[in-house]
Image (spheres, helix red, strand yellow):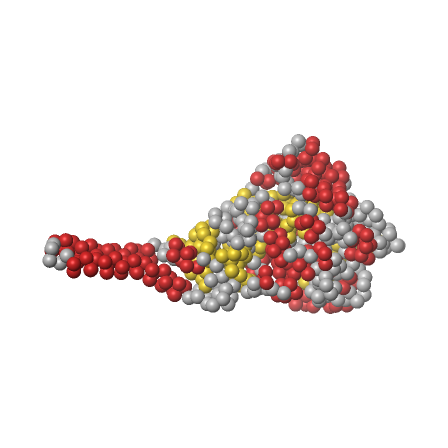
Amino acid sequence: MARIRYKELEMAVKIKRIGTVVFASSFAVSFIFQNLRDNALIIMIMIGSLLATAAGYHMSYKENEKQKIKNSMILYNGKIHSLDKNSTVKSAVFIENNIIKDLGKDESIVKKYGMRAEKKIDLEGKTVLPGFNDSHLHLCGYGESLMNIDLTKVRSLDQLIHLGKESLVINEYQVGEWLLGRGWNQELFIDKRMPTREDLDAISTQIPIALTRVCNHMTVINSKAAEIIGIDNQTYVKGGEVERNENGSFTGMLKENAMLLVRNKMKASSIEDVMKTIERAQDKLISYGITSVHSDDLQYIGSGWEIVIKAYATLCKDKKLKIRVNEQCLFHDIDEFKGFLSKGGHCIELEKRFRTGPLKLLGDGSLGGRTALLYDSYDDDASKKGISALSQEQLDDFISLAHQNKMPVAVHAIGDRMIDMAVDSIDKSRKFNKIKKSIYMRDGIVHCQISTEATLDRFKALELIAYIQPVFTTSDWKIAVDRVGIERVATSYNWKTMINKGIHIAMGTDAPVESPNPFENIYAAVTRKDFDGQPPGGWMPEQRLTIEEAIRAYTDYSAFASGEEKDKGTLEKGKLADLIVINEDIFNLDRDKIRDVSVCMTIIDGEIVYPIKQINN
């Protein structure tokens, strides 16, 4: 698209206006000469009127220039994908304060609002989308991960040990401080085995060390950490595992609820600590075009849910919370959840920036760690069926209590058995609490990876949200068949089947489990390949989403999941001005190149919060 200067566009509009005055003037002059001899008084009046009209137009224009509205802007000369029901594409949009006031053609928008707009931005043909809305991540956890050792690129245990030693030297850890890291994946190691307590002892026996697997469901610790925690051969954790070898000795591995042993021994974060973590994370997220998130934070580093909410409230009060947060409220203990409800924790909404959303429950673990709860044994380890972090009775009690308080639920469930347990509890609670279909709360299952056809049919019947993370397939395609076999895989990771069945999906990344980069997630959804382009043609290619389906799952479908579809998710009149400008026309891009798309500008509430790249103001 040819570049259009705003002043040239505005001049065209002005010329039309001036043309009207000139035409009137010409008519008046002609009339004057024809009647010159007849009535001198009329002539004088008309000349005076003509001069007054011209002066008035000039003064009006000057006055309009002075009366430009603050926090208003026109974006023009672009490809603005509204994602409305007709998938309308416009070239210009007018934003006033934090609301989208109008969309249309360049000339129409400039003619209507050019005098009022404080800023005018030439998009130079670039593409505009609604801001991305990650349907499930851990904002605080992601912010924390940016400060810890990144183990995602580690390819051997020797490399892991080297990075640990290097970090101790660079950061000058003192006695009592913990060395933390996350992101290791034994499937990518040359060694092809899990790290142990002895491996971490090779890093240090004086500094406590805790390194968490990429799935965030397993943590390995060294002997010093085990000593501080007080782990011995009798230590047992309900809903978790303190792993021991064939001799009964602790291996250093903590799974699921047993990971809380580490959290409980670490220094609780202050409000200020949590605020810094949130700000660190949000600055990175807005650079990816993420304007809203569904975030699981309340159990962050043992701070307690009140500390986390106070941190968000303070950021809102100080106008420092840029991103919009729908909190997925995680609780492990039902008495703590009751305390949360009694204090009105489930009814918080702060300036359309922070709100408490569904009750989040952790049902099982991960496929990679063989802790996702299955009906039948793992194909590559017949001794394991996974771990249930909550019993059926506990799920029933939690979910019924949430529903009684008009609070929807979002249950972490990866294995087929845990998915069914969660769906059963939701169904039972709705019947027990006499919740009619017309007022179903937007309950959902987070991850829902190892599924069955019958379970997906229940999703549709119960109108459940499927919170999916297509980016998981970039690594899981290599292990899924080994873990659960071809028959179970055939009905798993079935994102396209979900859409075809009419199931509500919402896309996210589970960051820091995966990168929060939406374009990598969309790439995975539409190609079913990993970042090396494997397998050729994609894994289970019949489950690929279209580009529009993936983008909608990241925008209006995610807004629907939290009941906010009237406020955001599409670019329409009256909705919040949350939008992004990207450097490629993603709808017409080679699918394999989508992962490389970048954000030029992020706008939240009508304010540019991420710097402009390659666009002239």
